[in-house]
Length: 307
Image 1 (spheres, helix red, strand yellow):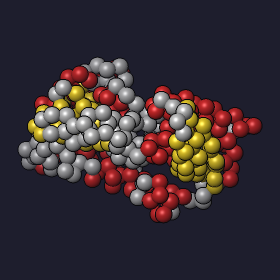
Image 2 (cartoon, rainbow, N blue to C red):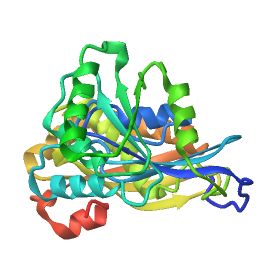
Image 3 (cartoon, rainbow, N blue to C red):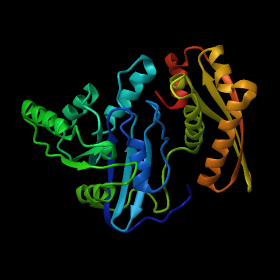
């Protein structure tokens, strides 16, 4: 991820695509597949994407800038409410809306809410019925729901429907072509060789957090946050100090694990992935800190980029 560059592509298609939808429908997996690189944290746990990640695809047809948003869910506490607010505001000022739906499960309240939101929009909208590898049983249910909402709202929106599987790639090439077709012509918004403008500290923190989620599963993921305190960039090795926040002392022991094994595994796996991302060796120092009710603390949420 080279952050120092000045080369911009010539005139072509260029635009911003907001990728929206409820939690756990595969938005981050879809972004990663479209780019062919990992830029978004991927986990089965709800709320894994907590920041707006701006991923950038530059190719012969032009440049697409993807906003991978937090998933809208039934909010609990300030953190959840802030995430929902960020997700809903992400469609403002974009060129294309890509609503991602889990087409393998029945419509939920949050899906209904997003369909009502796009019914108010006049900009191009694509509805991706994801997880087609699990079946298309509920595709007609979503289309019927949209037909009802469109009539109720007297909407002029005419979305394009696409059945895809972000996991195995089915329909993804056509989905990308459709996005370029709906994107206006114009000069590139970012230099050619930038994959993301997501801040480096947040990216490293997300990698660490993802590894925690893989081991903790549903045990306490929403009580965990990661903040990178320092990055010392050497020529051959980067030393990183990061704090892992939990809300209770009992959670601290869970994160550390018996004889420190869980935290050691997280560190080793994160170092390996960061090496693959940046091409330099990483040495992580991880500190687990108890910060009571951090999800309700505005200043901590602001520091972490969630407020």
